[in-house]
Image (cartoon, rainbow, N blue to C red; front, side, top):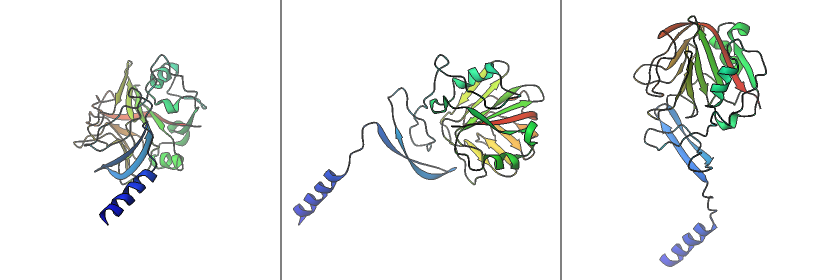
Length: 242
């Protein structure tokens, strides 16, 4: 009987299709994420897709294009905040999967008014990365690239592609540190990016008028704004439109 059972198991294992070496099945879970499984293709050790992982799992580096081989995003609408200088620096830090697609303005305080509820509503049904750009009353431009569109959620969401940036006037980018997975969290009262220790890398209120920026473990960033508490002058959200 034992031999028959062993033979049966051997036959089943032979029948199972072996995954190619460049395919990985990853399981993710953390206090701020619902558990999920994701299948990814690994191109090579130097260019590997980064995904949001638990604190105990080993992270892989996102695939980015350098400044020499990046392509400037094409904006399908006029921007009050972004010029070619901004786009050139940002393009080098955006994931390769966003290259070659036009960027569409999905929300602007100048067009849609100042309302977080409207921002969420404009992003309903989107399934693409977004770029949040803010200018404060001190004329400083900063923001965040989010791997996922902003939405209301009980849990944090996003992946290791998410990063912060600021122009002061020199460009600074802050990528995922790997310390936690508190990328983005949205509710009707506020939008929060990054976190840990009760401090957010970027926080906006329901009116998209008051904001705050602190150093936080998610990105090991410096405050993005001139003052930790700031007033929003203009705000735009762009999304990849493939």
